[in-house]
Image: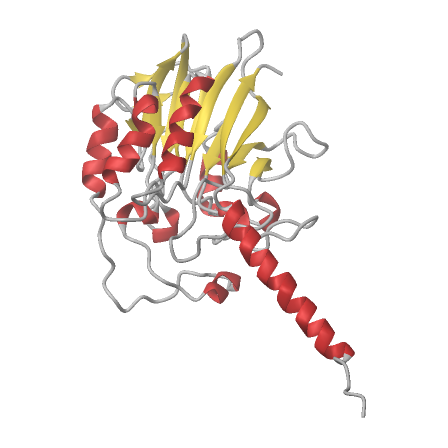
Length: 316
């Protein structure tokens, strides 16, 4: 008697399981395959020399991530004029020494920052299916563990970085006057857009500026709309992780906020197309970073490498 071989359905299930295991293994590798993105933004006034901004976001740093620390430190060799940190810097109560080590060469440069939800509170395990819901936040009956965010703010501020938590400020960078406006994390509903305008400095009153930047952690539409109404030249955000698990040739499925998935990462226009594209005449520029980390409870990325971005601002 001849024994029956595997059925077509069995072979298909076996192949599917093998493909799934391979995708999982790759996603663990990709989560540590850091990439530097270089983007040119034609936003400066005519005749000005390029201005380089290093955009860091969503490090989600934990103790022991030496390779990430070294990679972030090495970005100082890019010699940016300004560093912008859009939050979610850490993911562990004991991550302060590693974070300060990673950012040490950058804190010596002009910088600006806002915080994200994971700067305030330690991450918690979540059902990943929740990210497919219109609002993935959901109820949390347990009390979150608060991270030492006040010390973090004090450290950044003492180094000279500008805190843009629901406030405005002005920086002189490479001979240019930059007006900045920022918000606290909209994902926690802590955002309060500050009064004033692009030429306002809360300390000195009206001041002519060369560039107006908007900085926030989570790019919720209400924040981006407020920045557009404030006439920002470039809005800078993080939070989305670029979708974290993307579909090849398609892109992100979710953004973990109300921003559309096609803007989950990269350089775009807001509220319409990019200003240099048809129909984009009324839009401003928006850059969303896919970030450098993940939650320690979901340390995977697929078709969405972790990243930092060097934004080179130029005259059109």
